[in-house]
Image (cartoon, rainbow, N blue to C red; front, side, top):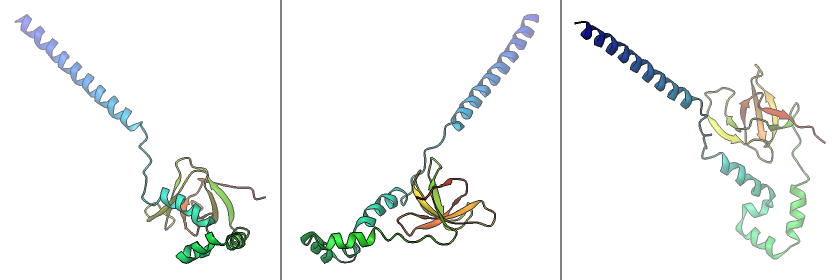
Length: 167
């Protein structure tokens, strides 16, 4: 009878030890899994829009509108040099209160249509990409920006950009 009671007590403590050990192992597993940052989401309009805009900015305006203009610019070297200087030295003047900046958040930023977290995403901005900060929201937690060399505008969370000294 004493031997049966000792077996019961040892079995009880063994069961408690197995439950505690299993719970600790499962807890550590899930804590380690939540410590790993997820992969950065790639949206269909993030990377292609940034890369696709750069070549368009250097092409002459006539080359975009008609296919015949491309053939003319390749056959007559004088038309391309006269069009390129017109496009490059005339940067659009900044609106009142706007300033140049760059993205300082290493993961890049999502452009949103309105200054709130639930607003529709209208694009993305990469790390160190040059931007123009147009305005701030009333509570100063969002900034309206325009991508430099583009007409794309949107709202980003404030504090993720840096002002760039103009020369």
